[in-house]
Amino acid sequence: MTDSLGVPLGGVPLHHPTQPQLGMTEPEAPASAQDEVHTLLTEVDGEIELLRQRLQTILMKHPASESSLQSRQRLEDLVVNLREANEHLVIASLDASIRATKTAESHRQQTLFLSMLAHELRNPLAPIAMSVELLRKMPGMSPAIQSLLQILHRQTNHLVRLVDDLMDATRINSGKLKIKKSAMLASEFIEHAIETSQPQFKAQRQQLELNLPQEQVWVHGDSARLSQMLSNLLLNASKFSAEGTSIHLSGHSETDRIILTVRDEGIGISPERQPFIFDLFNQGAVGEGLLAKGLGIGLSLVRTIAELHGGTVDVTSRGVGHGSEFRVSLPILQPAEGQELASNGRATPAPGPVGLGRAFQAKRILLIDDNEDINKTLGEFLSVVGHEVDFAMDGPSGLQMAGAHHYDIVCCDIGLPGMSGREVARRLQDDKSSACLIAISGYDQPEQRQLALEAGFHHYLIKPIFGKELLALIADVDA
Image 1 (tube, rainbow, N blue to C red):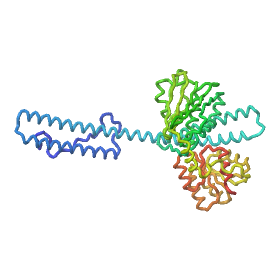
Image 2: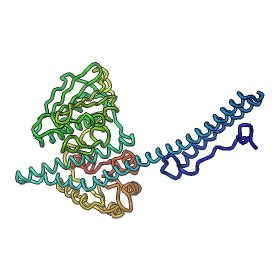
Image 3: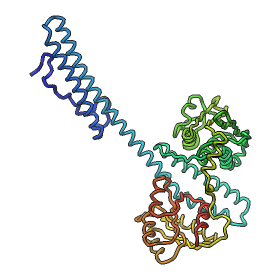
Image 4: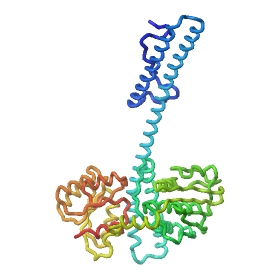
């Protein structure tokens, strides 16, 4: 039975398409998307049905005439058009929901891949870095070997930076890049960035020309991240400049900001690439016969760090072959405000190298790692220093050795086969072990660090560890 508009009385639910349309690539949407679309469908169809009933009531109150019949036809066409529009809206909503779900899953998979790649790269880097440190300590080497070791040292540090960049890329992707702000002088992070970049300038026989403000400029920021931001710009300038050229670092303060500029005489940036130069993983040709270097992470990290500090970064270049100029703008604190915040935030001394300068005390140390090269190189390094070292290749063996002997320190990997390092720590704590537990892990995520500390570890070091860092922790442990 139908009314005068040819529509079934009582309303019939709008037709739900059973197959994807309009370019949909998946057979069905996720349950949450289906629920949302079903709700939208019900609401819109209900409104259309109310409109139809009201129009029918109005038309029934007027006698039939040519004009009313025409109006009736127009209204009938309107109802049909509304229902068609509703159907297209539902299809478009399903399509958009599916695409959003696929994008989110792709983003999750990319973040997971980068995280696992960084972890896997840290494992071989750890024994390489430690071997280089051991070789550099050996006496009586010829100048030629010393020169080769310097190259190994620089390139190992470069690999470590690349792995760190990969981890930062995952944090940028997931929005988990965090900063810890405190009041400090801008000269602190500037000097550290220069120090970090010097080996690269020396290797390229490049000169760093400085023109920095002489007055004290206070900023409220994360010293490590701001240093990383500036050193990335300096290293980027060095990387894309020829040997023997100059890199220029200048700065000046304005009313409420400090402006830092890094200018090079390198290959430059083409106009079409400049708007995208700070995008994550931005790569591509930079000139005829020239390919972009690196992973395309450093400049994206520069922008992220600047923005997290309320700042900006931009680039200018007259094109390929004409060099580049990067300009960072950061908010500053007034001197009185900066000094007050610094004194309030530094009631206790800032942490530095622990235990340096103390009389040496030999410790008994247990290393637990399934990577034999890590055990061997790290064990040899600690033995050369004067410590007594044992090692185990898995958790159960490590627990057995810890139960049979007294150890001052247990250094344990997290990703052990069969039994994780966290489980080892929990069992050592249950056994009332007095050893200082140091996690040595390839996982650099904050949540992994937190889980390790909750399991009972006292310290958490990221592979590859360097001797000075570990020796400082060991020296601070009471025998």
